[in-house]
Amino acid sequence: MKMCILMGSPRENGNTESLLVPFRDELDKLGVTYDMIWLKGKNLNPCVACRTCQKNWSSFGCVWKDDVYDIYERIMDARMIVLASPIYSWYCTGPMKIVLDRLVYGMNKIYGEKMGPQLWKGKKMALITTCGYPPEKGADLWEAGMKRYCKHSGLEYTKMLVERHAGYHIEFMDAEKEAHARQFARELSKIL
Ligand SMILES: Cc1cc2nc3c(=O)[nH]c(=O)nc-3n(C[C@H](O)[C@H](O)[C@H](O)COP(=O)(O)O)c2cc1C
Image 1: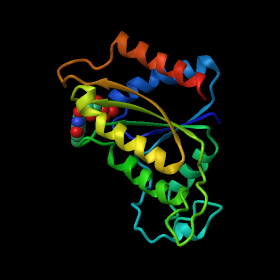
Image 2: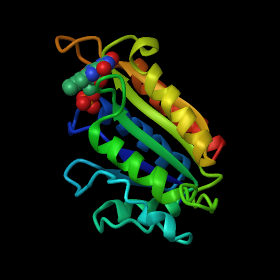
Image 3: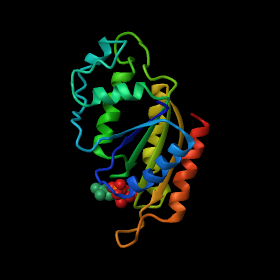
Image 4: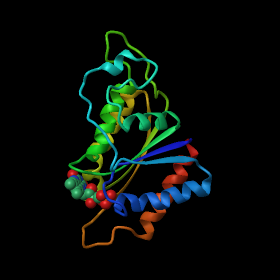
């Protein structure tokens, strides 16, 4: 699988999903294989910092046997991870944050007495987001956090697609946003 898309919006047919529709359609046209995982409704437990995962250098090794195990396997099968989430309180949504916390420990075996491997080293990451503020004041902190997360994890940060939701009285999706989503898919397909 070339791409694993993690979708953190709670809203089916919401703004973030309406970007994913043309984005995925363009991937299909380009013949880019992808796996799509909606986090909504999944069983996702927050990291409890037990560090059991640090004793297992060959696999995820988390004590929680929940849906993050399946997400781990599907990410390992992909070359690029695409995180799609609306901005909530200047970061991603809660379910996405749970997954990020679980993976930063489970994937990076660097929190024990000895430095171990980073299981996902070399994979690429891209972001798709929507926010109420102008992008530079709505999505800037999540992008900065994810750039640092990637550097820390041996991942290669690539780029972000961000579109503004200017108000509940205004239709979110338009031809320009659709064109941006298609262009983003084309750009990512070139750097996979
Ligand atoms: C609980 C909540 C918190 C939000 N926090 C922010 C925020 O901090 N900054 C921002 O720019 N927009 C914020 N927004 C606006 C959403 O990011 C925006 O409406 C987004 O397009 C929703 O995407 P969705 O339809 O996929 O859920 C928030 C919306 C909600 C519901």
